[in-house]
Length: 326
Picture 1 (cartoon, one colour):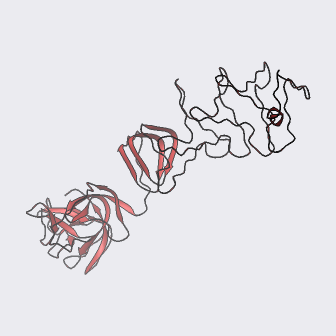
Picture 2 (tube, rainbow, N blue to C red):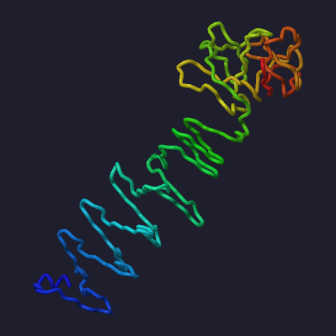
Picture 3 (cartoon, rainbow, N blue to C red):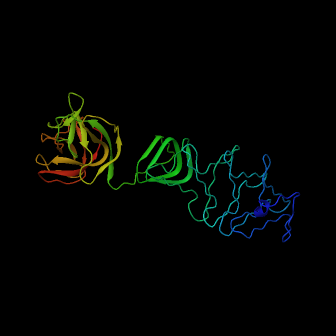
């Protein structure tokens, strides 16, 4: 009808009834609109129905219903008892897009006690977020609560994370991690709890497996005396084992090394003083950075490194030990 209105001034409104419609506009041209409604201060087009749809828009290849505005919402939907917007699509049910750096593609807010956004899926994941160009896939400013498993390559949180289970193949960074059950480290190569200590700069031999003592400066140094009560421990990470937990790992310009405090680790030993078998107590030896079997228990008080878990009949080698209290 718009092509007629451009040529003829219509003195009175005209109703054209087609197929039982109260108002119907039909255009046979591909370049004109079927019905046009215009108002300076009220709705351009209003549809009302007691039992059916207020407005029904259908298109074979275009948009079913389109709304455009320069200053307000393109489409506004309100319902007192049902969904404000209900959408079903062969592709996405709802698709939102924004180029505003301070806005979001889809935004949900609830002024009651319900969630701002709720997601559910019958067969797939209920919620999927993808971070492009190195951006975060998810960013939470408050606490995160999960009744099931939380699985992530890397989990970062500035608040509390409460979950039935957390599984991650990467780092976990959080303000606090509160655990009401057990902490189980599933790690085939992590076997001890270690702590980073400063190592004397001139001691280049403080490699994994090396026995260390506390030097006069407070930094750790390679052991060089037998039954040394200044014993600190052994550098973790030798062989195929590494520390499962590392304490006090900080950025420092000083040379630092993780020292095994408790658990199982590899240690350099010298069996020239006596053969070593599993269960033997170990202490420092005259061989730099190596442990030996305790032969004089009276001298070993305060100088125990741990217990041997392997055999070494003679010579020097690397064996597993159980680190224990000094």
